Length: 267
Image (cartoon, rainbow, N blue to C red; front, side):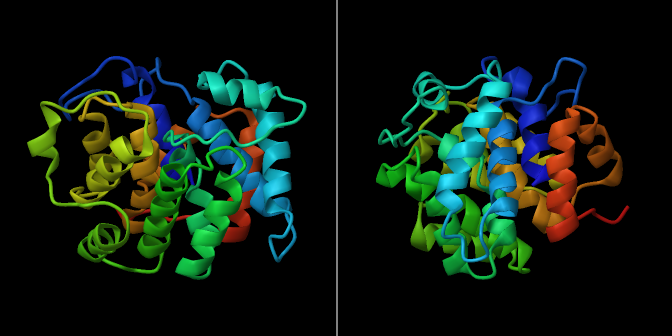
């Protein structure tokens, strides 16, 4: 899960400043966690608190997303989601925004099978993003993380995504020049997954995602969630990323990692 959080933090200053290079300072004093991280923590907390059969997962997800969303109300939410957070009767609003995919990393981590990854993803996504493309983007992300966690290669993950979700017949170099800010799942999730597929290590994955010059924090969060469980996060980078978090978010991270573990790469 921290892989997605660090990706979000590293991309935060580039979200509205398109940057078409991998050469930039990584994790600066200007970086911060955004809505991507807050909602990632909300879903992780929900998975910790729900029943073992996940029958109440959607209900608890709504509660935690609203609670943390209100606490961190200036984290940079989209307009429709912001209104949802403060609604007394929150309902899904047929969204296909990439907010569906940025927050589901814990679903892929918790899942014991691909089918369970899909079920968990749907339960936490359909409370807001119930458009087919929103559900698809979240599911593809959760499944990619599950595949990385269970030892599949980059090529195998790429092929599974290509066969079941999005065409992967492009390279980052081919699209980078003309790629632009796109908050839809269909216009940003495939590119984020490709940032992982082409990566050499965790940090390289985040640099790949940000270098597209698109929705940098969200795409880096999506890519980073996969990369953590494939490459592992360097301990020094992990410790630096944790330093951006508040005490209550650290408590969620600690509880989640105590139960489900985390991956540090070897020096």
